[in-house]
Length: 200
Image (cartoon, rainbow, N blue to C red):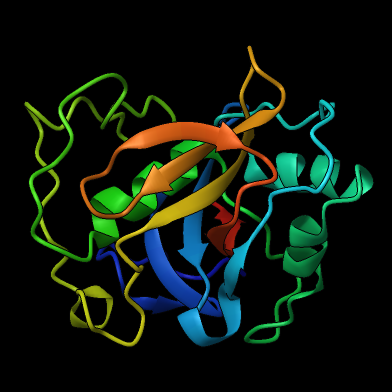
């Protein structure tokens, strides 16, 4: 029997907290972010090798990306795969679009949102979302995820599992101050937060 899907981001759900709905390969999922204490990784590299990782290019399928990363030797991906939280063992590193959803629906602060490039555009979200300039992300109503709360994302950069398509030495990152997305070297040290998903 499938669990009843919450409607409010930040609601405790299936080992973590409900974020929102995402579509991958014509299938809809409920995205769940891990509790911070167990599911956040301190600053570290995406991978120690800068070689291209085959299979880690998805914008919406972090699970597939994470599996590809682990096969390529990423300690970060193996950390996510080894997590056992709330009785679940299918945690992974979120893709670029999954990270955007975490920011949009669980934004910790009140900073103005980024208004350039791809900021806010998420065609994998259900429903799809558009630039923050016309659809502003506001500070989350979930108190535990607000700045200073026990579950809050830190207002820094977090790794996504999405490798840059045109520059394989780089990976996409999500900022949790203003929602910016940018890319940087795989060998750089950034944080990570695990997620899991439930088919709807």
